[in-house]
Image (cartoon, rainbow, N blue to C red):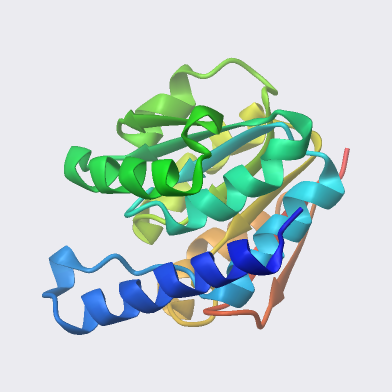
Length: 195
């Protein structure tokens, strides 16, 4: 359960992220999700009873915290992929500060390769918040690794609509998937594997 103290901790971490990004160059920015996006992710994970969760794009671990806190009641596991080992070290520090590091497996890996090597249907929930230009290439693998009834949530559907459009159009054209964009945070595109 998210109590007031934890919500305040998450709010403080988000505010620190905003300040960091204002003082950093584009490459060093964390680009954290918004708190309302975090709440939405938490609700989606909890309500779907997701235990096998994959996050693509760890950054400093802010979204990872929301996912791990949601997975905790069911003893789920969040695997979080990022190509930057330094960012994952910072994420580990944030996870430890909240006490959820045991619920997260941080992996420094290329998501495209990692998804190709994953066996079929092991994922309940996938959060995409990385290089948007690569999502379309990953779609075949995502379909294979997501269990029937599983969910994909993609951030930045509205803030980076042109970059996301090819992936979103392909998803909408794929039979067996129901998708919708929600005006939460920077825009969340939610995909249900409706099989």
